Length: 360
Ligand SMILES: *[C@@H]1O[C@H](CO)[C@@H](O)[C@H](O)[C@H]1NC(C)=O
Ligand SMILES: *[C@@H]1O[C@H](CO)[C@@H](O)[C@H](O)[C@H]1NC(C)=O
Ligand SMILES: *[C@@H]1O[C@H](CO)[C@@H](O)[C@H](O)[C@H]1NC(C)=O
Image (cartoon, rainbow, N blue to C red):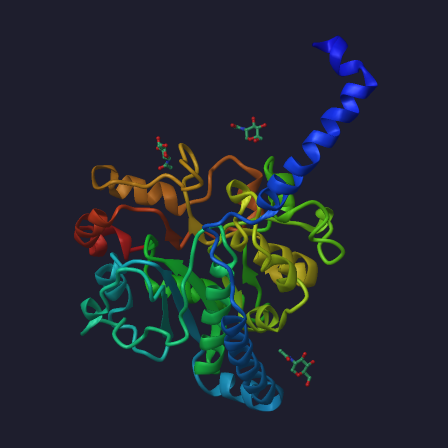
């Protein structure tokens, strides 16, 4: 066998034979995963129109009006829910917002219109009427999640000039502390107007994630040395929300489909990379949303079940790990949200809401 292959004539013969095979198989191999949801031109144009409106409104209200408005009126937190199912924990969030008055927060829901979804359950809750009309299909391992998050940011920017922080959440997220402690923590540092977004480097899978769209594809906009990863769940300042929807340069790259779906988590890269490149000083480089990656499966973090819930667990997941450089690096910020929990955790959480969850 070895002898035969080393013969030059056989080698060239094998090459000639494999040529049509390559042509046949090549385009298939080079095509993105066929189940990958692509961003269509009409969807892209739709988004651009929304972003333009949000940018122009923000630009107009920038100079003096916003400043004065913020001096006169209380600023708000925009809670942005990204979901492809019902919001299992809506009653818990309802309790979280209870008694706050609408002058401190707004809610926006981006729900995948193609997913089974049951908005009527929101009637009579803080969520009723908060679905954003521009929502489009989303799919894991595709840039559609980035689009959905940018849509949420643009909608919240447009909707209320008093929105000062923009918190991204999902149907699996729960609040870990009372509303007032979150509000206090965010606006205590308001002079800095910094975002909370995890920005990590040197993760083992970084290279395979970088080349998930093909070798060299991210260049020249995003060299590997600038490529970052972090939790999808951020709290952005108003300045950064605007920066994100103004971006065209990085989006051109991150919107490309992946060839390798197993390394494809665009939303975990786009936001950390963009903010790392554009305004690291404006960021606290960590997330406020607790997640347990021990025993993760298939890219999903550990999902807590009802029997695991206790005041002890809440205490544990509120604090950053006791031994770590992360504790100093977090400037004393604890976690304010957590994921993931199975939907049947709702009742246990409601039972411990007053005695534990919403008591500091
Ligand atoms: C608002 O205006 C000031 C000066 O007029 C400018 O320096 C600043 O960058 C603007 N902010 C935004 C978010 O556009
Ligand atoms: C994280 O999940 C693992 C199971 O994979 C569990 O044993 C551990 O207690 C969890 N950690 C926390 C802090 O809940
Ligand atoms: C804390 O973590 C560091 C690095 O992760 C490790 O070297 C050190 O031994 C740990 N300290 C304790 C008290 O566990």
